[in-house]
Amino acid sequence: MHKTSLTAGIISDTHGALPLSAIKALSCTDLIIHAGDIGKPAVLDNLQKIAPVFPVKGNMDRGEWAVKIPYKELINKGGVLLYVLHDASNLDLDPAASGFSAVISGHTHRPLIEEHDGVLFINPGSAVQPRGNYPPSIVLLTIKDKYLDPRFISLA
Image (tube, rainbow, N blue to C red):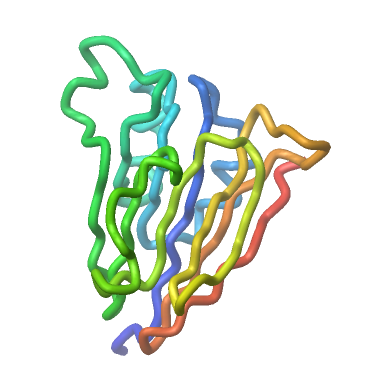
């Protein structure tokens, strides 16, 4: 049977910790996007056991283990282009003109889903250190027929 949709798990700002609640929430995903501030290579190793991982480097990702991680990532899945970077304030292009369906970032530790000029901006918040009275969270992004359906998953 041909699969007509896929689910991307979006996680950010783990800072070296990967809660069991995040592992459980991501267990249904086809791929995982880590939007930076990973903290330790073990976080990526554990996520890789669930699904292919597309990480970007955050401002706190330093050391030999982080050298190979890109600052930006372009993901083409399910007929959509996803642009991933850690800090959305460093966005140096027009995502709509570039043909991106979504811009995925972290950094603020605050969850956000907004649309601007037909482009979805997604920040999953932080899986371990949320700010602004938000619970720890991730986003599950369903991609079906070029349509994006993001939803927050509280890890509290």
